Every structure is written in structure tokens, then in C-alpha cells.
Length: 97
Length: 97
Image (tube, rainbow over all chains, first blue to last red; front, side, top):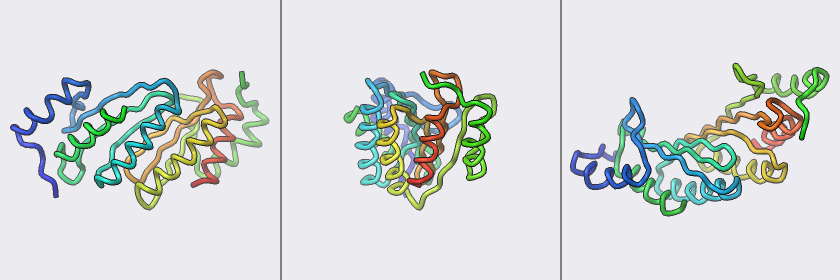
């Protein structure tokens, strides 16, 4: 099982994501980001590419889509909070978006 | 613009969907259904196929996915409620799932 992020990892790996547009979710050890695209084709195109990475990492997002907006929440259920898998998937999604 | 469903259409077209597993959303003229699949590949595969139909119909779902579950809500924003487009997309999704 992947361990929860240490304080040192939060400073090194999580802080840059929070500075880049991710936010902490209230009441959970989870991060969230809302992506806005030009239209549904762009939004779902992003989801399709992110889905392949999620499956490859064997780590899956919670996400909501309506038309051109995609709201992503990341946390590691098995660990009960944020792990390096969330950091990796967040970085990958930012690179894809 | 597509018109909201008439009472006759609700009896003829909406009732069978509600009998098949869709539900009315509280406080909105919208229908929702939760699909459960075997895993993320199956869940996202369904979403990918439904996305192509949504774009073809130019009518898009509100949907939430976490791992093997997909929660779909359908309503027609421009019409302020349910229209035949929602019925068509719901039928198509049921056929795909």
C-alpha cells in the first residue's frame, strides 16, 4: 500500500500543485481542481487521455463533467488520504490539460 | 429550441425509463441513473461510447465517475427541464451499458 504523504513531501510535492491551481478539499485529505475547456470535445478528450494514465498508474480520479467543465478530486482511498499517486496523477493531468 | 416534455410524452417516454432504473432528481426537472460496472476500464469505456453519442446528439450529460461507478444526470439546460433529447440520450446510454 502506498503511504500517506509526509510533511516533507507535502512541502516539496503538494505545495507546487496548490500554487498551480489545485485546492485542498474541505473535510478530506484530498485535492481538487476544476478544468475549463473550449467545448465538450476538448473536455472529454482530456478525460480520455487522463483515463489511460489513471489506468496505467492503477490510480483513478473522482471526476465530474458537464459540457466543457471537468472537476477532478484526487485522494487515495486505500491510504485514507493523499499519497504520491495523487501527486503523480495531478501532475499528469496538468500536463494534459 | 427543443420543448419540454408534455404530460403525454412523460407518460409514454419517461415512465418506461423510470421503470427501468432512472429516477427523478429532487428539486429539478431532471432524471438520474447510477451505473455500476466491473472496473474502471468498463466504466470509462461506457463513458467514451456515450460521449460520442452525446456529441452526435449535441446534448451532453452531467456525469460523475469514481472507479467503476458512473452517475448520470440528464436535463436540457436551454429548455429548463426534460426534453426528448434527454429521453434519447437515456435510451442510448441504457443500450450501451
